[in-house]
Length: 471
Image (cartoon, rainbow, N blue to C red; front, side):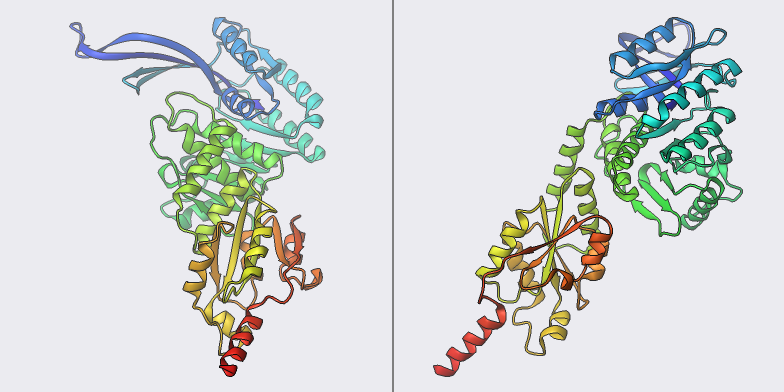
């Protein structure tokens, strides 16, 4: 974790009187506290998530620098890469808060680039530890640490070591970050950095393409305030992720939380999209807190459980299902998928679904639509409509979510949902399972479950017809 280190100071109080000296309110101080800001806050978020963090930056040779260094050490963050300025102060931001609302901020800073001596120390330390790291995060608050020389060295070394580099940028010249894997600007930062006016979502998409080309990055995650965030990847359609915040008390440090959670998820193997959804949840949690705050894995898990519980329906459209599956996977839950017509549910179906659910945390069933069943089984089928079949499946405790598809096979659906486990009955050979190549292609697996012999909808229908003839 490399970037600008900031000491956040908070002065809490209440306002009930107006000063007799001037027409301004009087703040009656009740408490004060200090917290980590800037790159130090990103490191703090990572530490709260259970990561081992090496923090690289510089602070002043002053009292605030001492206090900031102590706070960092108390969080269990490695501080060997933090160097001291002699002729400049530690960057600090004092926030005045009355009745849980921020009313004033006082900044103390020197934004000049660091000296060549400090630059050399940072580069040497970075080169020393980078090969052992899972990845690198740059938090640029434009306070002078991330100079062109520091960034260029970092990008070169990271590429050689095949490490992801995530940049939270503040410079309007994104060419400085050339070589980064992902950049996480907010929309205003994007608008300042491109030579076009951004007045629409189409303009924003063009701006993202421009910046990806400029930086040679793999993705751009743009945070958009109340509009959530949008993930732009090379040669892929943008993915909009709506905000899920319940209440917003303070947006201080929310961007730090987003970049820390997104980076952590990416470093441990999550896809860009799943990492973005996870970071969106974390950002939604932290804006519900006052002051610079962090998010824990337990809070993310609790938030996810609440989101899943809010969806009381079992039968979902594909887009809604994809969101819930992505949320579940982003916190480590395994998703099992199977499909079928499920016309006239029998004991074999129930036993099969029970065994399928036992393989993971969520069971998703792709249900052939009426038109799909007719194309597969003939004009006399289905016996039950898709709505009836879906309602019956919904009543089974083993089934978490159902989505109805019109195609003759679920191949496209499997590609959209990307389950961890694809399940079929052992009346199939594994090479015959539709979607096998897709799931194995991204590292998932196929499981064949033993089915109850002699039980099938077709056999049941034939038995009913035979009995009817006898009667």
